[in-house]
Length: 246
Image 1 (cartoon, one colour):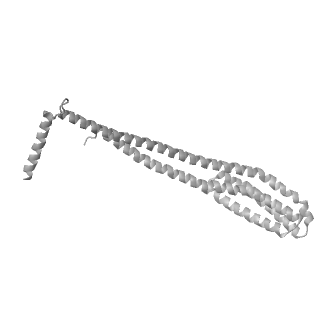
Image 2 (cartoon, one colour):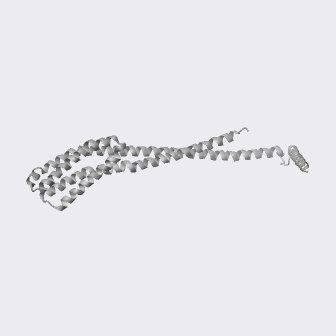
Image 3 (cartoon, helix red, strand yellow):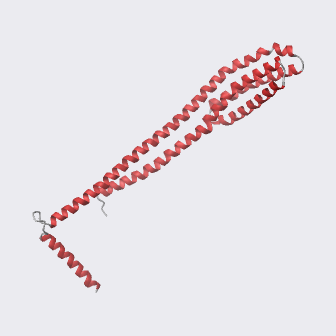
């Protein structure tokens, strides 16, 4: 069977709609994946990395306060902060698997400095508990050295966190832009299909007009000889069919 031009046109439009439907589905799946990655990786890493420096400051303040006036409140605060640091580092080690720069910063720079600082602060508590507050007070300001050496590490951690978030956001924007193009393409094809259907109705109307003109007199509108012959042939075919049925 030979297809008409309009049939080919509609078939191509149908194929294009099918293709863009699959494309749009994949684009929206990509958006969901990128958003899930932001929620699963970028935001948690940002939250955990931001906790390291404040926690280290809390250790310093707790120890200083305890040296000046030993009390259970400062000791409890210190222990809570140590537990918080341990949990934060554990979560960071789990989250940085896909981020080599973050992994290197956490494992080779942040963790060693934090471990050295906590060893120093533990020793300060031991000196106070053993009654040697003078030695603890003499070493009191050494703790600020750990704070100062951790500042550039914290700055690099924040820079890498911003990079991770920026990359995740860029991937999400790219997926969103792809989805927007899909919508534009689908809308364009839908318009073309609508035009095709309108053209179909126009062609059918033109066909009916041509048939009517060929079978009727242009001046009077009365059926012409061709109309009578067409009617007679139709009647003959009908009679033949009836006889064959009988």
